[in-house]
Length: 344
Ligand code: PBG
Image 1: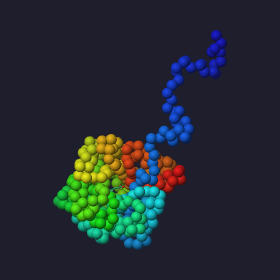
Image 2: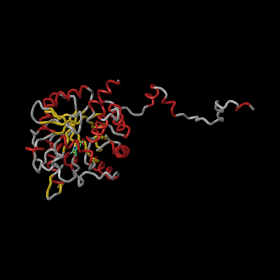
Image 3: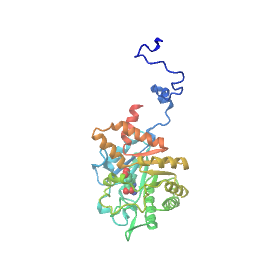
Image 4: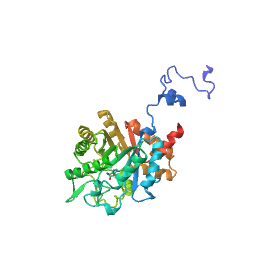
């Protein structure tokens, strides 16, 4: 017949050849995409890590973290006020201590007038509406750059815990809302909880860096807090092996038993599987740390014109939400909060 006489006309499809179920229908318009979206990133999900410098009117860029500046307390206060104004609920503080205050025991960490405590007092007074998260570990205070006390070439656990307890207490006294032990010593959460309670700080929360891996992605952070050049060896006897996943669940379980109010997985991007397992297993507030190396990767690619920074950054932060994180520590917090505000 002449049905096939027009070679350029496609033959009619056989009945049933086209899909009945079309996933693209729900993606067809902006309004449906909005309606069916499963996760949403807001400023409420962001925790902004900041680096503190001693002195006054000091502002120093961190070369390996473009856009990040270390600030003296007087300049930090207005920066944190801006974060609060943007709706960011919490800032995480890290001191960039000069070599003079460092020693092998990290004694300065327990000085109630150290840089960290001075910053906390100033921020609590001048920006009362933002949460203060204090990193608890000895690396910004030790002359060898390790998170604990080094004896005969080993990081000793129980003595380190005693110093960490004192560090947590001076921070709590200075107005810290969440103490975040990032040291990975065994038993520190229970010891800190007990000490906080005994000293009238029952309301101070503990965020355990439970699943913290011995990672190469911390490099730029170590530049920022002047520990990179000091560090001898690696942190593999206390931080976790990147090969392990079940072990992360055990770490989280122990920290929860010892009294952690929330737990953290760190680094973030290469460990989204761990975040998902932790969230599914324990159903507790779970934070992710989008660490310095992850931030630097994006900035470096963007500086080369290889990707759209704003879009890639928001996609990355949304991925944390999708993986089950309740909040994300990210150096991009201010940039993200501004973009989210623009987008309404
Ligand atoms: C150390 C600490 C580190 C980070 C936060 N706290 C580095 C380390 O363990 O060496 C890394 C954060 C980042 O890379 O952004 N207590």
